[in-house]
Length: 482
Image (tube, rainbow, N blue to C red; front, top):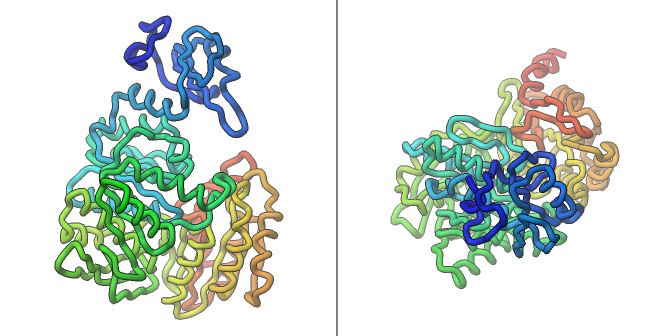
């Protein structure tokens, strides 16, 4: 591709120059790339513009005049990065229908359920999110929930080239705020909930909500959970101010989609799906436990119905799903039960532990930690929630990165100390898992929270192989025998 084809309405000194790629990271730069300078909170890459041209950049995109040849001045280089990525990869989203999911908790499960339904009904659907980037022939490890614009459009292209008709994408608040796919139109946008998270990035809940709300400026239809204040605000905003159709769903009240006759077991949940959109109710049995998964299933069904899928087909299909990796996933079931889940916020812990508690015949033993170099204000509240809902706690590490691991644990323990629940602390998560397995008795439920599907533990700058399912499988029998 030539510069003239990439920049279209803009004039540069060398329009016939061949472009080898788009880049906003100097560490990934290659000769012939267009380098996009972005002013971040900690670093402004405009200072690298001249160096990038000397190293063979086809052009540089800047937000202010640097007096350089082949510079293109734009108002917002971060947004323009997504425009360039889309053009460079041949506008692949024109061959895909996008379903975008946002919210604090539940995004991965909702996305996985939407993908499952569409694939089960004979469509070809890829996915981009926390669990991985599925481009319909290959599944790549996810570095971010929503990858950067260049990587995102590369994935879109590979997915479309592989014959995908749909793509379900988890949209993080950072991804939306940074306009990583700013000029797209999603066939459906889904909002799951909003609870305190990433406040170290956004500052407060209002800014966090505004970032999430950006998604619904680029959707043809919307599906919104109205069980919390922010969902109700968003629903009313879309209904009163936007042109796209919107439906609400609820596990707590009557809505466009709502649940009645809810029953939950240790490894499943059942309910009747009622809807103002249809004349009858539908019985469902999910192979996933918890009231929150009932909400997730309603979101997925409502979303595919917004795409034109018949509700009977969606209801029949979703009941075939065996579950989602690392989301309320039963990894051992015999003498006692072990479940792993990605719950890593106070709200997610509360919902998950309540669902486990509701079906437990014995005690609930909970292992969890808090991530390093992330919002530390949520740590005591995580400890408090766990102390209120579990019978025994083990506090340990969860991707500490470069932060002091004992300090992270101490922050969590602040929320536990006022409660009488017994607890232990272990910096080594492997030792912690073995310790909690040794405490388990017949009919107990052991829950491992925080890592879910992840198979690595990030300590310092290293990513160390760490698969909780494998650790449990290798050690559970020994702990029972002893």
